[in-house]
Amino acid sequence: MKTFDNEWILDAFDGRPSFFTKRMFGGLAAYLHERQMLVLVEPTKTGRWKWHGVLVCTDQKHHMSIRADFPALVPHAVLRKWLYIDSKHDHFEPTMGAVAKRISMNDQRFGIVPGKGRPLSPRRRAGGRSRSSRSARKSRGRRQP
Image 1 (cartoon, rainbow, N blue to C red):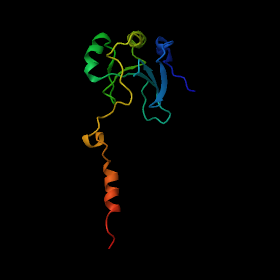
Image 2 (cartoon, helix red, strand yellow):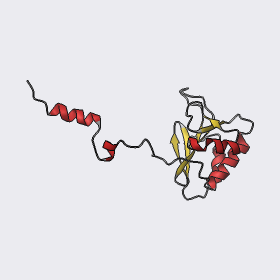
Image 3 (cartoon, rainbow, N blue to C red):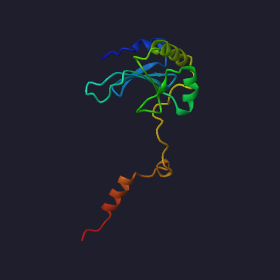
């Protein structure tokens, strides 16, 4: 299995029962306290992106507060909902060491609940069918000339 240059950051989570990792975006996502907390990213072999650093998963409402504590974190250029620090940044190691410590202490500003996507439309919440299944039902019920 591929190892990532910055896996040392995850050492702060060792021994925590809820800690696990999973591949994501060609990177390594770290989960703790039932939330996705970080994604370690490195350039892809295909060249799709050249990021080398850490995505810090958080809600945009926490950006200002987190950035006040960790000014080296900035909104990612593509995934603006998350904060990012490039591994070449002068303050990368102290910043990520301190961020990992806060995450391990369950700082609620960090992390997103996995699988929490867009809210369902009222029709979908009520068990309605998707547009494609309604179209299929209509076409089956048509009379043939």
